[in-house]
Image (cartoon, rainbow, N blue to C red; front, side, top):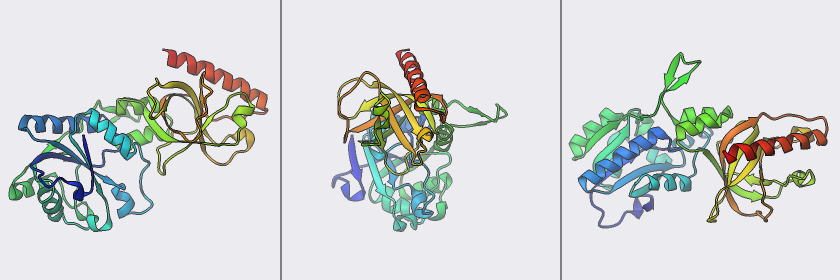
Length: 319
């Protein structure tokens, strides 16, 4: 898969292509259906498939400070769409200048003059151009003028009951974020088609875990990472860049209230593993939530609970 950042990275001899456009945060099952349709259409037409996405998140530019929690880093997003068969992962820097382009200017300058789009496939709620004035119908009309076809793909996925089953919502990045924010990593995994992943670098913490007999890897996370609700989780611990299998781990998210902690941390106790991890890039794949955050009267009671958490983690991940 080719990876471009900005239109300047386009090859000089670039021909026509099939394009899908969006933020695609999380690359959930709805996104996967849209990308799958793009890849199939491109192969049927004998053209390359291009996924055009944006960085930073458009809301951060349009409404500074309103950026939603990030489900996937750009690197992870590229890995996931490559597995789905996309030929080109193109990242367009989202700038104030780009946000001010009218729908027609965006189509002419980006899709036509640069990408030479033959077909554009987008989701049913797609909006583009200044103040999100462009709709799927706008895109379809502009396609007739500029010589490409535009198609609307339903963001498929099993409907998810909401409010006790009285209503239904389709899979969306907003829905996945709400699951993660509530600590429901099982529901998030159902919508994503895989466990929710946090990526970060192992840094030195206060060392309390080692003092208690459960040394932890403390993660420094990228800004805006979608961190699950406070509590203890079973996770797979992935050493990125290493070929070994993921390692079972019990992960604490929270402020360590037993020791009057204030800073929210993500700490992983990796089972049956004692190598130095400081400075390494790692990832956590969240499997299930064991319990919420608890304040214990004594460190001894905390140790008893951690031992139980580890035993349950071992049993869950063994299955």
